[in-house]
Image (cartoon, rainbow, N blue to C red; front, side):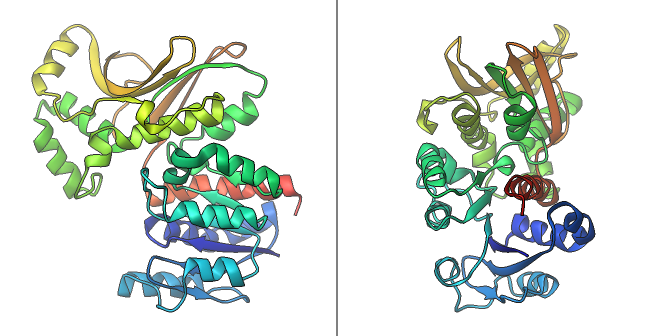
Length: 333
């Protein structure tokens, strides 16, 4: 029996819970039987070593906006017996907290971690990897980069043995939606941003997305985890999309180009940047909507392109579930 704790019960945490409910038969066939023994949010939580009623937990969260008070995530880590934590709390790229403490404490106890939280990996990737190795625990983080677009396991598993020269991609679905709509409609950034907010594609405060902060954080994770680099967030040259105009698209399209926010790490050229770039209209990265895409340059396999939906609770949950499956296949549990 696999015992799971979910830390963070916002859209992503609930998305994971929903998949665990909906796909129980399929997952039982892949990893064996499982139960969620604890769920927590920033205000409280539910513990049941016989298995939390996830449907009821989702109803409580949707109804009250919070789980019952009196239980903290650290209480769960210290007192509940579980095999793996799903860490899905809010990203903080400055301190990594509270997720960083949650992940550290689990790894110190030899508990495996699957996370969608970029902050801890941006702030302390090498420390967490060493901590996992020291305590024979696994740290899985496919969901931190690209939503449902598979890239971490693709490079580590399917491209194992290749040297990765560079990774160039679209890593933020909100920005891609705004730019592709500006391309099509020739409306202003402000008009399309308002539309994106109405559709729930952009946050009320879209700064993390439109200033390239989210994409830069993901780029740091890719550089450190897949290319063996040791870079920090402040090492990324970063320009957002707020100054892009409809006229810029007019000029670009006349010459056979479009504009996309491109995150790029290139070991040979010593490039680490996020910025709006001209992309040929027929280029694999000239995608529309909220899609993400990455072009991976390798020495043996050549160029590999991967595309996937980069935003949404179910899409991120898909990446978390794929990590859970790989984790327990590797563990042989």
